[in-house]
Length: 199
Image 1 (cartoon, rainbow, N blue to C red):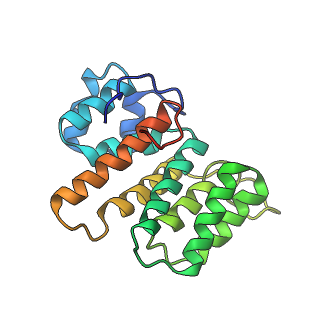
Image 2: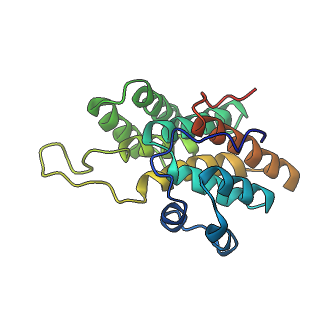
């Protein structure tokens, strides 16, 4: 995970204490907050401490909506490519989430919600689609007064997609750790303005 100290230019919030609280980071991670000099250093300190899930969670809650949903989509694609069983409704949910990333309009946001609701919420794809829906706008039906999504909904959905892809049927503890590191590298690359496919 080299380059983690490069500036994170794609964050919706760079306030480490606020994001750490919103994302419900664990006690060990919270203990590192007072010494944080910025999000880049904080993520690096989490990695150094072996707190990979907390690092993933912090990025999930701090990335801008479009960038965060893209990260969830990449995790969901990796899950599919790893050969885990995926139902057609999950494939549809992932396609809808990707469509929102490429064209983040209201029609695609609502379509992502419809596709997510057809799933059993057992795969990263369903959470990527829900992240699209919770990215902004109203979560009420279109003909009703605006109801914003809960403040933690987007981050929770992004985190859910990445974590499910990380922890599903690992071959060994090392395999799970390597997956966490790989997805975290993607998240860091996106935060730095990359496409989530670091070399």
